[in-house]
Image (cartoon, rainbow, N blue to C red; front, side):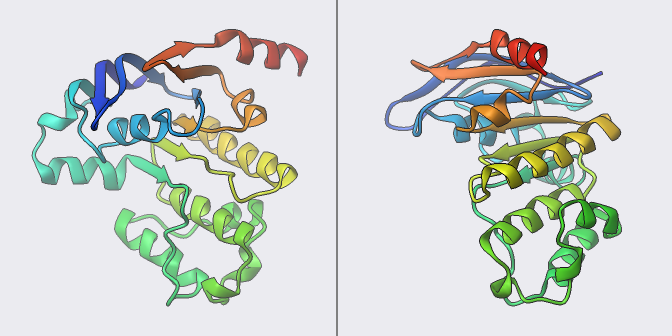
Length: 225
């Protein structure tokens, strides 16, 4: 099942970010986008995830064709119920405790708090703690758990493990990928971490304004494992 397709996308600000991008994401699939800082990986995620309309091209999500031709309310519905977006920053509400942060996501998505998920992320014991009392790694794990608790069909992750040590990052991404497999979802990750990228089914490199397939890297990684 095809979850997302992008056709001939391009984007620029005062200069060209990328052009001629074509990409598909299927159910159960994990895609990594790698590239140097400032190359435009985050911009691609924003264009694909309804957050920023590309300068040209078409993005289709599930049954919605050309999402940027939809009305604002229709786009909001897709963003709220079908998509999960993991940002580099935590975007947690510091005036609330952990449970209250999770409850906000629960109300928005009409999904219950997933205690099993919190156990997997090793933060179930923090429910009564204020956000400021959590370590940076705990805040990052809470941010990711909050997104997954929405039960999204498509996940966009922008450097999701940037604040985690390598061992914790690997464990967290295993939980995320388990969610993808269990719920027949899909994920697109922008990352500098090649270890995380090599856990994916396909790897693309953004270079010289174009997205280049590096399928061999993912194949090699799966062969070694």
